[in-house]
Length: 271
Image 1: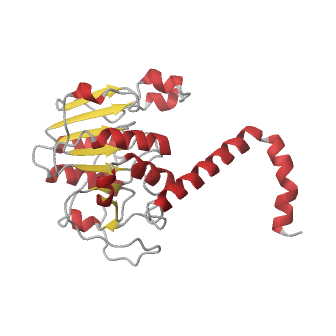
Image 2: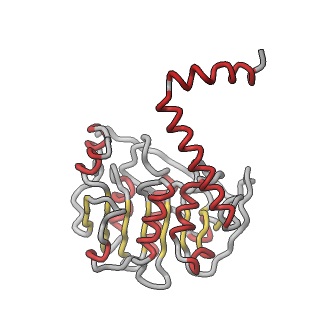
Image 3: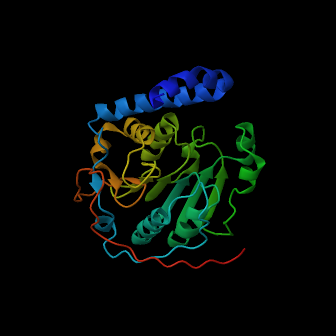
């Protein structure tokens, strides 16, 4: 029997025995197809234009701390990228949406003059069905930072005007659904301090060289029309960036030929 025929024969019993899971998968498939259609409408069906990491940080030489190498966190190079961006901005005012264990904050906040972090409150997480194990990890790596203000609130319903503050660098890493990214993107563009301010979005790809259509679609639909031409994918990371200054870009190419290498050392300590 061919693999195709076998799959067809197994389909109905699989659906009947796993109806809820099938419906979720079908919804996810439908949402991804819609997101791909949105991205295509903007002319980015092959991915956002790419800005090279070393164009943004030409003297990159950094390290990070308090990194778990566990699910749910940014990659080490994403955290290095954020840290060094903050470091390059004098008296950086930083906003982060979505923090969980705090691995990005613990590395970025020491480079900032002030920082605000907005994440779901513990009660909101419970109401959404998060396990107590996940809730227990909230802010796990954070210590007392006098320049950090943590706010427990859903970013999609938070009144950002209550902050009375604008920001030099904003990191969006909250709800990764199309609607969630769109809402957060629309909010943070209103919070940029000046014409040099930067937004970074996480999880613009599932891997370094692919495109996560739901996130990209949310960014493009949430961004003001006049800002979209300054939104790029950052090479060698999972990040997207709004970068208003003129910078060299290149067209997305799958299976990229390496044009740089990284030296990495790892030291681990028990908690």
